Length: 384
Image 1 (cartoon, helix red, strand yellow):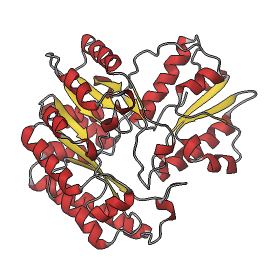
Image 2 (cartoon, one colour; image 1 turned 90 degrees about the vertical axis):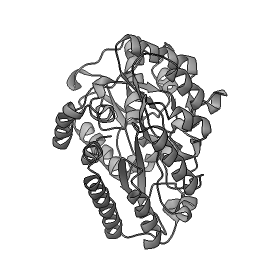
Image 3 (cartoon, rainbow, N blue to C red; image 1 turned 120 degrees about the vertical axis):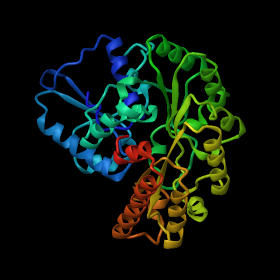
Image 4 (tube, rainbow, N blue to C red; image 1 turned 90 degrees about the horizontal axis):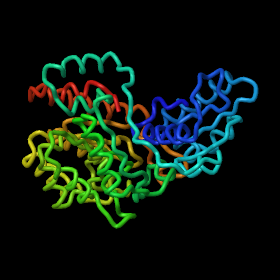
């Protein structure tokens, strides 16, 4: 199975597939001896889509005899036409474990707990990892030392209607039960893990489909007295209610990703992001006051259709506030079947790259001026 270069959420799904197949007595073999070649694919951004289309072509050229290629993950949903146009001889599956059960006539067995193994670090990653031996920042451990992290997949899919996102077409919201997540969490504690990551496409909407919620889950986790740290991925700003703010005040919560996406309320409304930015900023300020240990990561999209220099300057302004310890900048790209792809007033590629570089430079200078070594280290690497 090719399960590399995908986001944490898809990597966890790939591990679910691997464990399901092993539970049904399938054996993993090398490329030459395998009957089936499974490719876990990501299409979060345009460059990833191209990367995986090229990887599929490469593998198709290498396959021998009666070997069959199966592509699963996000690409079959977001890039179906591109796969067909490339005349790739592959079978498509999606982000649904039941598809594998039906396609391969498997028994619906319980899936063992999935872990993510360390992937090879980049040069900058190795440097950051070395320096962190001296400052021992758990947030950096979380980002760079995956073997030390116990990843809890709490849900997949979301309830959002973002106008730029094709990933939301890949799966609907499916949350696990709180009792299941707590069982896995306690298993991790017994195994000696100290860092736990709550993973989902949008962790803020966890449990809504089960009449449960993320606050109750986090509350139950934090009630444990053992020494451990919690990180939270992809938490939509709309979920920052009073109870979550109180829970995030715990010094056990050391890292959270809150994707703001833009500093312009006008652009956020065009993006169909359902929150008031001014309220979100106030909530983040409160989190910082309540929990001095927490590191807050955000995502920003520059060059969204219709984004003027005035809109961009508003995004730059929130970076200058210094509330975000890490900022991941994405240059907008059209994605198939999204509302944004049909919008007018597109920003040029040159201007998008310029705006991206301005934000990165500002972030670097901000961390230098504030002598924030840990923040500087977190922003030196693009490791996901």
